[in-house]
Length: 310
Image (tube, rainbow, N blue to C red):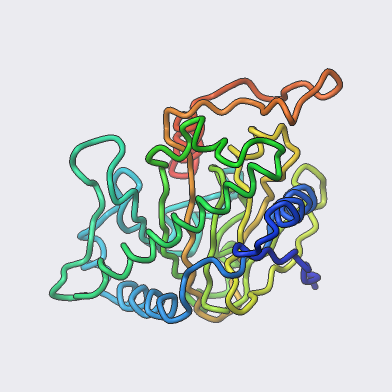
């Protein structure tokens, strides 16, 4: 039986930004995960988002497949993704819907897909509002993460990471019982996230687990329990590269519990042209950079290619 992890709780509105940044630094070094309170997303809005999400996933499959995932926007059915490429399973037993930047950064035509207003009249408005609030919270959080890394709080803006960031909202539905196959116990197989930070909202159903030491065997998994009013934040690979592995991009997965589970993950990735290279505050003669510089978009695209490889 896995133990429950006692993650730090960060208050986004704390007036003591230096102390908050220090707490974030320790959380990212020790866990790569923390809870975020006072993030600006009202409980009422979050409840409505999950109501609308459920309405979408309850639609017939043929209706959902009218919006198949293109350019990482739209619907992915059960087993379409395998977050752990080494897994022998046929895919992860979850379905999802992706919403990309509301102002597209790569083309004058916005690539987002939306359910018909005749079927779900409030859906687009609700999700756009949710997206904007998550983006605002993410930007405020990144200014604190910059302070935590001993750089100027507008660092991520200055390097272009937040100049039209490549941010995606992903609505997720994990069904309840799917049969007795051992291959289907992982709603999301073991993986790390690809970008800077991820902000996760859940419906309160347990399932998230983390493995703090991803290169050690056997892996030790710990439960991350929901906390009322809090988002769950985790560090992604790009932030790990920026910090020369000072901040952890922690391995995590979702275990199916027999209960339906809904969540919403907001992946805040940098502008694709932003160069990601080791921060001077995170390297030295005794700890040289572990990774070469790379465009943020190139790294994320390669990880996505592996996720959707047949």
